[in-house]
Image 1 (spheres, rainbow, N blue to C red):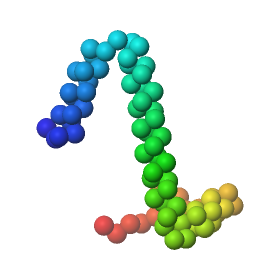
Image 2: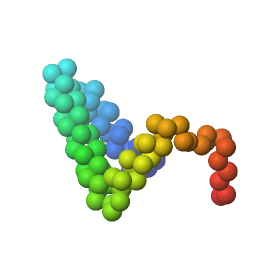
Image 3: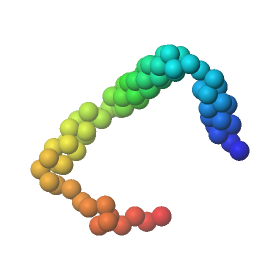
Image 4: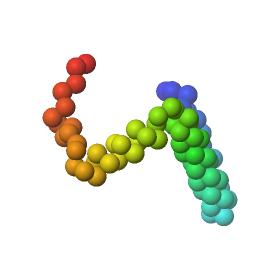
Length: 77
Protein backbone atom coordinates (compact mmCIF):
# COMPACT_ATOMS: atom_id res chain seq x y z
CA UNK A 1 0.00 0.00 0.00
CA UNK A 2 1.38 3.39 -0.94
CA UNK A 3 1.90 6.21 1.54
CA UNK A 4 -0.89 8.14 -0.19
CA UNK A 5 -3.35 5.26 0.14
CA UNK A 6 -2.43 4.81 3.77
CA UNK A 7 -2.96 8.50 4.45
CA UNK A 8 -6.31 8.50 2.66
CA UNK A 9 -7.42 5.49 4.74
CA UNK A 10 -6.45 7.29 7.94
CA UNK A 11 -8.33 10.41 6.85
CA UNK A 12 -11.41 8.33 6.01
CA UNK A 13 -11.38 6.84 9.50
CA UNK A 14 -11.15 10.29 11.08
CA UNK A 15 -13.98 11.62 8.90
CA UNK A 16 -16.29 8.95 10.28
CA UNK A 17 -15.84 10.44 13.75
CA UNK A 18 -16.75 14.04 12.88
CA UNK A 19 -20.09 15.70 13.47
CA UNK A 20 -21.99 17.11 10.47
CA UNK A 21 -21.02 20.64 11.57
CA UNK A 22 -17.33 19.76 11.67
CA UNK A 23 -17.62 18.02 8.32
CA UNK A 24 -19.00 21.26 6.86
CA UNK A 25 -16.05 23.20 8.28
CA UNK A 26 -13.69 20.63 6.80
CA UNK A 27 -15.42 20.81 3.42
CA UNK A 28 -15.05 24.60 3.41
CA UNK A 29 -11.37 24.28 4.29
CA UNK A 30 -10.79 21.67 1.57
CA UNK A 31 -12.45 23.97 -0.97
CA UNK A 32 -10.11 26.75 0.15
CA UNK A 33 -7.06 24.47 -0.25
CA UNK A 34 -8.26 23.33 -3.67
CA UNK A 35 -8.68 26.94 -4.78
CA UNK A 36 -5.22 27.84 -3.53
CA UNK A 37 -3.63 24.90 -5.32
CA UNK A 38 -5.36 25.79 -8.59
CA UNK A 39 -4.34 29.42 -8.19
CA UNK A 40 -0.71 28.48 -7.54
CA UNK A 41 -0.72 26.19 -10.60
CA UNK A 42 -2.19 29.00 -12.71
CA UNK A 43 0.47 31.43 -11.52
CA UNK A 44 3.17 28.89 -12.33
CA UNK A 45 1.84 28.55 -15.88
CA UNK A 46 1.61 32.31 -16.33
CA UNK A 47 5.32 32.61 -15.45
CA UNK A 48 6.25 30.51 -18.50
CA UNK A 49 7.42 32.92 -21.23
CA UNK A 50 4.93 33.04 -24.09
CA UNK A 51 2.34 30.85 -22.34
CA UNK A 52 -0.52 33.37 -22.43
CA UNK A 53 -0.02 34.06 -26.13
CA UNK A 54 0.17 30.35 -26.97
CA UNK A 55 -2.98 29.72 -24.93
CA UNK A 56 -4.87 32.47 -26.77
CA UNK A 57 -3.70 31.11 -30.13
CA UNK A 58 -4.86 27.64 -29.14
CA UNK A 59 -8.25 28.92 -28.02
CA UNK A 60 -8.63 30.82 -31.30
CA UNK A 61 -7.73 27.70 -33.28
CA UNK A 62 -10.38 25.72 -31.43
CA UNK A 63 -12.97 28.45 -31.97
CA UNK A 64 -12.14 28.47 -35.70
CA UNK A 65 -12.49 24.69 -35.87
CA UNK A 66 -8.82 24.27 -36.68
CA UNK A 67 -8.36 21.07 -34.69
CA UNK A 68 -7.23 17.48 -35.21
CA UNK A 69 -9.24 14.58 -33.86
CA UNK A 70 -7.37 12.61 -31.25
CA UNK A 71 -7.95 9.35 -33.10
CA UNK A 72 -6.21 10.89 -36.15
CA UNK A 73 -3.05 11.62 -34.21
CA UNK A 74 -0.38 8.96 -34.40
CA UNK A 75 1.97 8.91 -31.47
CA UNK A 76 5.27 7.08 -31.53
CA UNK A 77 5.91 5.55 -28.13
